[in-house]
Image 1 (tube, rainbow, N blue to C red):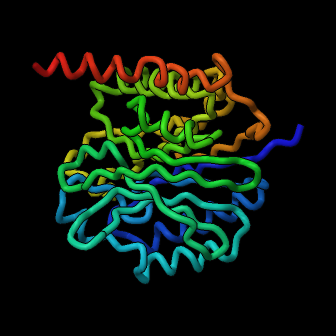
Image 2 (image 1 turned 180 degrees about the vertical axis):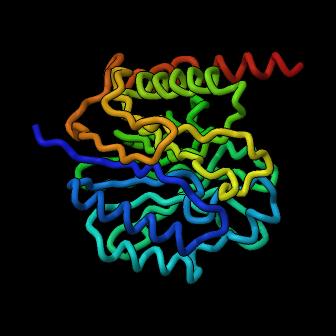
Length: 283
């Protein structure tokens, strides 16, 4: 059985230090090529950092047609692996939490977070998919994976793999509950849609570099790949930088119910009922 290798670089991003973060992307691409990985991801907002205040987020943000993007494309042109790289994106006056999908010097597209909870981020509402090295995939970002419909949309569009770059910064008291809930969410998304779900998290090693206003928070890592049956194929170490490597079966066929995917069948059969119940609950 021929498999497609993927990777995630569980690296620490330094807020506002684009040059250093781009160097880490180059380092990750070198590692991905050495491992034979066709696709490599980096944490949420990796190139800019993910500060929790609007002035800091805007200070490092850039547009899709900026010099910063051209430099990322130049780095990617020297490597074989396709890269999914996050950043704070300016789009006119608006600010988005975005991942760029780049390969061999080309910007193949982008995805913007649809469940962005920072008030200064606009919500993305487009769910593109791409095909590379035999895999059709989509991208969600962090909190997006906690909701049913975004993953369902990608699966209905043919995604076999959902890559979900993260940036976790969790208060110490909430670490265990966060760890348990996130794994449960991602296991559900994988099983519901019969897809591979790739959580690509960050680590915070030096809080002073994080750009966060709450220095006590923890970025603990724990990146993993969950297979369509809900099993963890591979995961990283916690609380340290690490690289996740996993092999995906591109021939995997989704579970069927009455001839179509189970999630698609459920939506077809019960979607109108859900809308009706929601309408009644608002009255």
